[in-house]
Image (cartoon, rainbow, N blue to C red; front, side, top):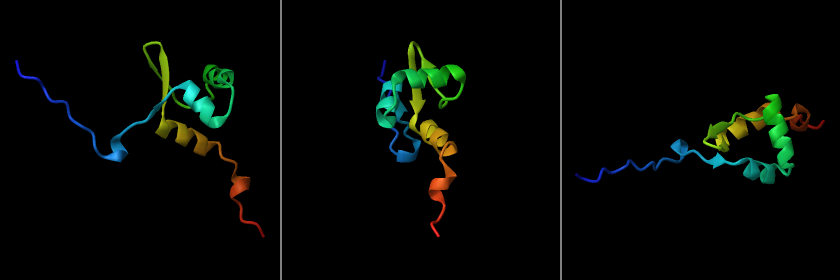
Length: 78
């Protein structure tokens, strides 16, 4: 039986970066308990359960953060 070649994804826009809760908390400088509280309350970023592991795609995290940005920071000073 021939060995089947798996496709290689080369385009950066199709590659997903998966983050663990620890990765997210380190990046956002928040306690791990905060992430799990948000998740329990349905307030956190969309997460995927893979076996016993929780993962969030970089795209989902960035979209979630964008929705929570404070518009006052983007107002032009005048």
